[in-house]
Image 1 (cartoon, rainbow, N blue to C red):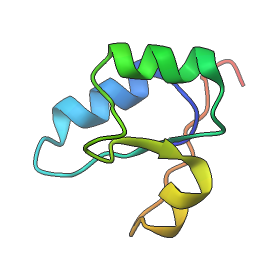
Image 2 (tube, one colour):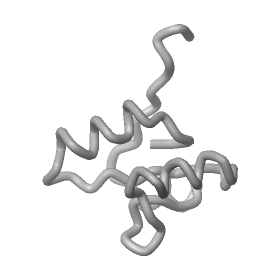
Image 3 (cartoon, one colour):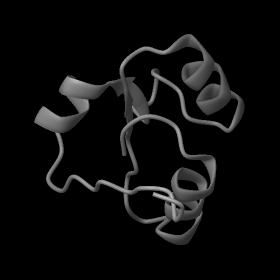
Length: 68
């Protein structure tokens, strides 16, 4: 996942517990702090740079807000 959508990221992580969910971001400090507070961290590779996350992933999802 890219950027920080708490409902989407946490739902995928909790629903697909046997699947590693990685969150990629453009290093926006606000998004990173919120993601860290929800348990996504760099140390276990669940949070990282957007381009590194894309290149190391087998599947990339683009999720948008309902209002979009």
